[in-house]
Length: 421
Image 1 (tube, rainbow, N blue to C red):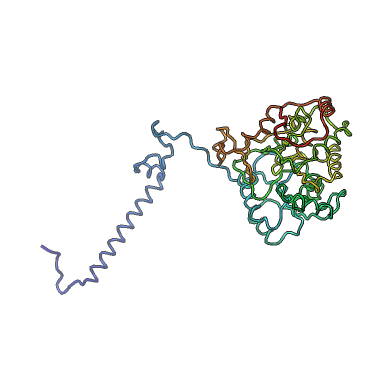
Image 2: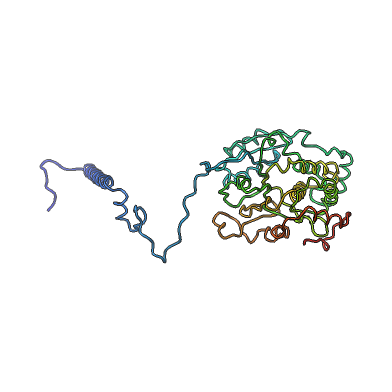
């Protein structure tokens, strides 16, 4: 028995195809209509009740069996484009950089933005002894939406100490070029002098109360979900650091003797209690400990104080920035130790940080979810200077002067005899 036949009508193959197409269209239309009616009634639960995994869309997902539990998932991260609540200090992120270091600074700023500044939105102050190129400005503009202020260093900031001559400096560069890193570099000496006692006088920095130093080619490993500036201010702190290594002795051969001369001539500028014994052993000699100043967060009232200004001017007249290679790190560190109490100096153990040569990664398990680094590779927990910082207490001014009076003035470095007690 076949289909009924109509007299005089014979269907063609094309008619059969058209009929099938009409049938398919009717089925699809009917299905979509039914589905839309169901979802208008209860979209999430209707679909969830027919899924093999009930937790996917259910408004009240069932609890997983204990043997399948993976713990509580962290909440979604707040958008870093949304400003963090709370007040801000009058501070900025200050960078000394060359045009040739654009890629390195972009790398540093990208991590710094992601970890901190996309939410806290402090301005950047970029300083250069040359005019910034348009390529440089465009490259930085692509990294941050925060304010960027560009400044140039003229001869008032990028120059020789008044106590030295270019000719004698050139002779010293030749003598020292193979004795230590940057031994033959004139620009490095300009940089050390500028960072030691001039950067905070630049017009773009002069109006700031706080600064956070950033450099090209550094890495920030951990989320910083609070404002270190505000934390330091609220806790009476003036100097913050992450890494504390030893300085190369050859670069600072006369720095401590020069410092001793200043101390004895300016006892009235010293506080009653200080962290002096962090940089000085009981033998009265410099133990080479210093805060690595490529990262420092500072209340600039420290550098603008009468005592620090006097100390820097004394060093600037002693020729060591150019005839040796006194770095800003030991200069800042010795000054902070002589002029601040221990409670005014803070180790930011929770800020994971790397500068070429050394790195710090927090070993507190509570920090692991916020950091991407290996605490086992952290230099800080092996550093004798870091350990010493944790152990020492304040030293009375009278005790400091007594030790200096009883110790030999002239001193030549002997690693076997350095007193780190």
